[in-house]
Length: 257
Image (spheres, rainbow, N blue to C red):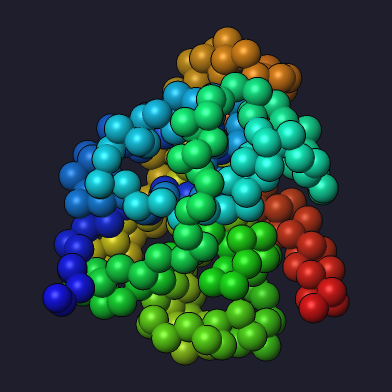
């Protein structure tokens, strides 16, 4: 049987349980008409994990799920395990707000998915890189790092997330696009995502009311919800700040390989 070809695909990465941002994207006319939604991981580590997962699950077969490092960490936290690194406290706080059905929904999701898309052909989707769910790859990463990461990739296009910053570039013979972050974008405000189809790849940004979103998040029951909303909804880290921090992590990861 021939592989299915999708006409329009909306890519939503790094939602981070920001339910108001997710609702805004799903209501965006450019996104709502998409044939399918590819969910690129780091979906539910954040202030409103249960409602965000429920909303995405309601999409049924229109949702195609990929796991990120936060799905792995949330499942571990729910199961009572320890989370090394900076996400431990946040994973525990989010895990306290979900049920067994949410935990099972996130467990066992694939690292990558490949879809055939009209006008683009075979396209690989991953959270961070095709080989790891937590690997930092940036728009200005050295060519040799891009070559190593994409060495075994045969698809001409790769769509990723993880770093919360949109980009579209050529690397090691592939077109690589970062869809940005729906719930915690770095740089300009709004919910970032990508639309794929016969017209090519378009990086999108959906604006929503940050003050109203912050009020809903504050009432979520999430630990330090006010601080989370202030840091990621009412304000935003700049792309320069994020690049500086992530470049250091990328360098450390390279040295450790």
